[in-house]
Length: 168
Image 1: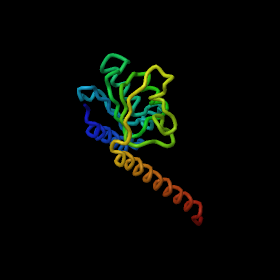
Image 2 (image 1 turned 120 degrees about the horizontal axis):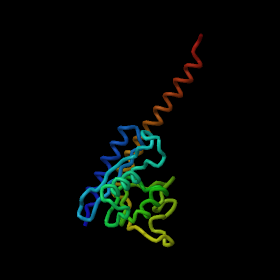
Image 3 (image 1 turned 180 degrees about the horizontal axis):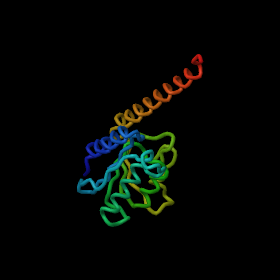
Image 4 (image 1 turned 90 degrees about the vertical axis):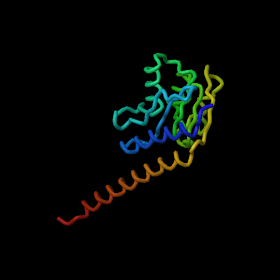
């Protein structure tokens, strides 16, 4: 049995790398049944200018290249935030066995919050799912990131407003 907490900590390390790079701090780690990390990734949308460069997608692509197959059965994905519809669909299409995530995503979650793509009975593959692993830590890094982003945005607006108010 895999140590969900230990692997979520690895996903959190990836999220921290994303945070430091100015990316939305979501990290993902794909692990095989023996506990070997097959792939790891974090969001790269801003850096790559690619709306599909989510941590989950990058990890799936890396694992497929490394293993030489697109069917990723036997793997568990650990991700800090509930996958979006695109990522949940990619998990189903890649035949990943299990997804473990930290915090739910009320705005875009596709495992339980808005949709349940990973366990939808009409699809030809369903994943085992576990939610809430290190939820507080996963939610905290997102809050910290968006809090800093709001502060920067507010400071820029204040600066811009002062520039227009300045005497000539």
